[in-house]
Amino acid sequence: MLRGDHNIRASVEAIGHHSRNGSLPDAMRAFDSMPAWNLVAWNAILAACARGRELDLAAAIFRRMPDRNLVSWNSILAASIRAGRLDSAAAIFREMPARDLVSWTSMLGAYAQLWGMIHQAEDFFREAMPQHDLISLTCIVTAFASAGQLDRAKEAFDRAPARDLVLWNSILAAYVHAGRVDDARMTFDRMPEHSLVSWNSIIAAYSHQPIEAARLFAAMPEENLVSWNSLIAAHSKIVDEAAKIFVAMPEKDLISWTTMLSAFGESGRIDESKHLFDRAPEKTLALCNAMLNTYARHGHLQCAKSILDNMPVHSLSSWSSFLTAYASNGDLHAASQIFSSLPCKDSILSTAMLAAFADRGHLQEARQIFAAMPDRDAIAWNTILVAHARAGKLHSAEKIFDRMPHGQRELIAWATILTAHAQAGIPNHARRVFHEMQAWDHLAHDACFTNFLLACSRDGRVDQSRQCFGSMSVDFGLRPSKQHYCCVIDALGRAGHVDDAYGLVAGMPYVADAVDWLCFLSSCKSSCKSYGHFQRRRLAVENVLELEPRNGPAYIVLANAARIDGVDLRPITPEREEKTNNR
Image (tube, rainbow, N blue to C red; front, top):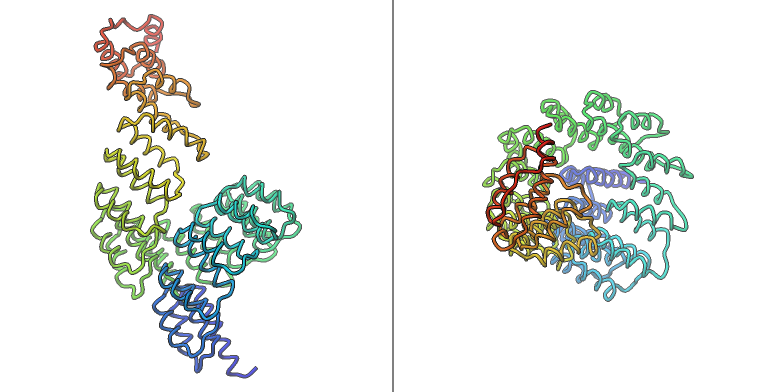
């Protein structure tokens, strides 16, 4: 090999190394220091810009390239996709002189994963793609799964004319990523064959069940580093067991050291984290960040600063951890100074500073950070939305929600605006948001149903309340909680359906406590003048007094009910009086 070729190869490897460690400035310096650039070097720095989400820099480099190949075009396409620029990505895709399966699957994944355009992804897959092979099928399954559309991912998997091991592993990984352990296990058991990837995925599924993870590990025909690392991760909450596994490993890599160090740190065993850090064969960026996070999480700011000062390179996540450490310890001034001093700020750093201001109610400062961000991801949008909702700025929160790109309107955003309307006493708006959320294929979670039921109750929509309550289990597979029952009980009582409300309290699959019975009594207040259900209320009061004999509000409710219904209020039964006196 010629010396010049060796130097170019070493420089290209350096560019890749810095890019993987999140240090684009170092990658650029490695590129600029090269005496000459070939196509491989140009593609390497272009890929580094794409990885760093620096679309403008990537576009400038792409324009400077003397020659381009398919790798170059796919890299600039990836840069546009990662930067969230649908218009730019679509234009590049149309301009490409040639396309391969990577090009097509990149666009397919972008439609489904990045922008949340599930229907467009399906149309793109069925009509535009020239090849529908197992690779593209795997991509559509992964795309649907990443967008939270597991049912559609399963439909695409079931429609496949043939299934190879990669496609099986794809649907398995989808279930694992979504935390659907039972479905993952069922898929694993159905697979005609298993690879190491399959075994490692199913062990990862049991990351919170160390006993089952260990049993699966023992059943593996062979293991690799990924298997061992998954086993350590599964035992991370049982630190002593994780430490035994770490010692027993035949070999260790960066992930092994980092996972074990983080396990010690999360359990508060900082000295052992530091001991492991000192023993590590290489102080990589990831390991330094793990030690920095450990110190930062526990408020050891000077130790965190020492780690930061001694790091050979800093990633933006390093600065983010350091900045968050000061903010979490109440020193927003220091955090703000650190943020202002950084020459390069990405969305992660800006979002960390935004969250620091928002969590402490500094809404004006949070707005300024948000306004200055060139690119905003879903986390940034949700953070500023929640900040306004918490501050009671409902009109501003609505404006932010309406401005959010549809692809970044995650469930938390819908839940936040729904909750804000419900708590502000605007039930009709809360119900509208709930129905819009369903129209956009966002599956509601427990809190969304709670707020919708609360809105129905306040607005007197008893039929909608009943329908929504029934839909939870039938259409969404959710088991209603006691809180959901109480919302429906409240709606029934307010609407004068006292017998139905009483029956729901008595028949729900939870043990009714004094709070539940008082909820029933409270809901019946508004219907007292129209409905003479004194006996139901009296039974409810007796249930409250059985549970809490000295509950004063219960006596008051019963006395008011007797006065309104024109019933003579007899003293509580001798048996009850005797029980009360004995206590």
